Amino acid sequence: MIQVDNLAELAEELRRRGVEAFHEILYGPHGGREGLDVGEDFFPLWELLLPNNREDVSRFDFAAIKARRGPNWSVDPPVYES
Image 1 (cartoon, rainbow, N blue to C red):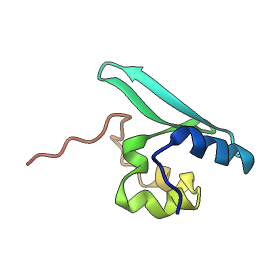
Image 2 (image 1 turned 45 degrees about the vertical axis):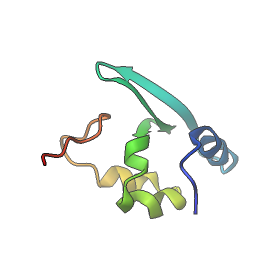
Image 3 (image 1 turned 90 degrees about the horizontal axis):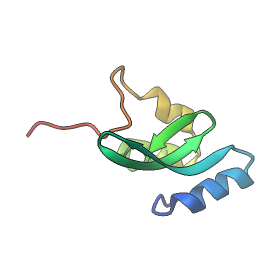
Image 4 (image 1 turned 45 degrees about the horizontal axis):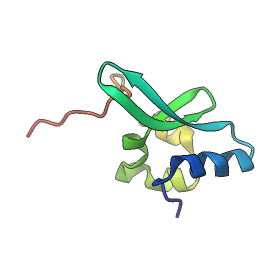
């Protein structure tokens, strides 16, 4: 299984497989969000670590991850009420 603990290495592996991917940090009003730029899409680390995305990350299926995003998806992680 692919480990997401080193996004620079993961991006390098994707590039070896012919996928345009880069390790990035996007800065915004809530600070920096580390993640991967894959093609024209950004996948923040918090999203890549979600249990329901693990299998897709290991298959490099970023289209499946993007398809699960809701209409209010944001680079910022969701806030859950307790």
